[in-house]
Length: 349
Image (tube, rainbow, N blue to C red; front, side, top):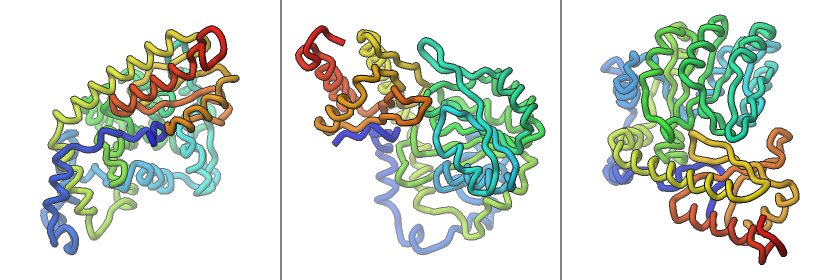
């Protein structure tokens, strides 16, 4: 079975991560971390602070970015208070507020010819109208794949100074591995939370390793997220090994970008299909409505899983995770066979 439906990095983590597992000893398994004696939470938070040029106390660790998202919202959102989040995005964004009795208000992304975009002025206008306690931004956004340009992020942070702003960068790395913008944003906007994860770019989804960089005013969240007994030492060893392997991940990311272009080229050749350019490890494609059910069955028979949407915003869309080059070739071959005249019973689609 080829799973191209959940945006995992199917190349897997770097060889150094496996070496780190082989080198685990009794201490990592049976002894609590003692990094607190050096005045830091862990070796990982210390390393991330150096990489991002942010004070270590402003780096928080969690079990996946979902965990830190939940912590941030549960920490600051109360009953009847509002969270502003994207309408066309991860479904959990619109559910997390309800867990604490909050109310969700959504802003729409704009569908362009080959990409989705954010209307910054429209978002700011909605913000002023609704006065949300928390604002959530995803860049790149799932499933549309589009990102906020840095100038737009700066404009939003200026406008949202009265709220807690959560910037979800779960899909960081596939288009750009720069970190300079985080230190600048964190220093100028003290109520900002930037979420990062090792699940996607670093291919450690099963290990559930994530972190947040937080503004200096968010001491309440810092206390809320603190763990007296330290961080998972196995996860820490894996994450540090991943950070020590930039060449491995750069090569994989470059290969994924090339394969992403192959998907664009394929769908550009077929009438009724429209792809949306992505900065992440997936591609969103709008397909002819009449082909949705037969394509789903066809791929199931070929033992290939992709995401078929039922949400109204994406009812005629599929999302394909960029797998390994071999998996992508098999996926494109299956699509080609499905759309061939012999299978469709007429002219090529």
